[in-house]
Length: 310
Image (cartoon, rainbow, N blue to C red; front, side, top):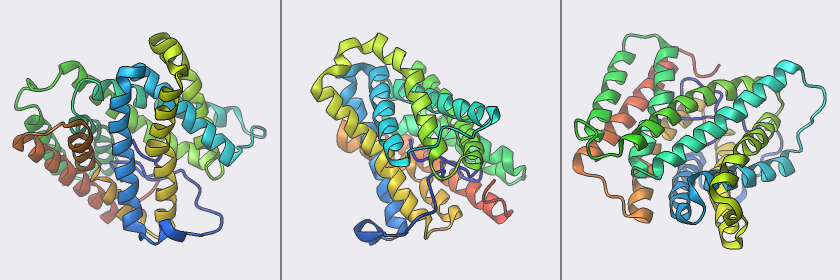
């Protein structure tokens, strides 16, 4: 899971992080904008791998709760969003955005609890990819859709017999929520200044998900080691990527950013292999590659049509 998006041309999120304020790239900026995006992607996927190792201690729902709460606290402290002066429609938008964010994370973590990380991210990407294809309405996108479907077919070995069906269903549902998340991220970004909407939505998502985490994990959430690991997941999966992508987007076109973000399934497969020992078969690796190519193609088609942002 990556930073929020206001870009329907991207199969993966682009940004509702703040774009104003002083520069100050410093050491992080010295990586270059492409390096910053790739570092953010690595942080997200290795954070997800760390979350999988935490699940035996806190459960999938407990891990999501810890991640959302920690990220919400950090964003609220840093952004200090203004609570007054917003219309009922503004609040309705940010609440739906927060609920979509919570659902997306909850479903995704249920998926990675059952199927390899690389496979889960590849399936999840189908949601934003479908949104990108529908937004474009160009015939060439049928090619990208067919390529993605071929990748999904290969990922399951032809019948998904190699993957837990429930895990597949959770990943696809997470993808649908990711598409909704992108739409409402864009709307929230237009209604709230800088990252205020993101911080408020994260708080809404954390509060909405808290009962699920408490029911599943109870007092295990208060264990100091679990809290520390949950905070690390939040930093790696939310706070650090938001910062890196913010710096990158100051110097990198959104279209290039979106193409780089299309590499997420590959980074997830790498993190799953290195951290969790989840090796993909040759066919599954080809499947991930096909979905990445389809995502890049869909992005480039949108950019070529001149609809980089909404």
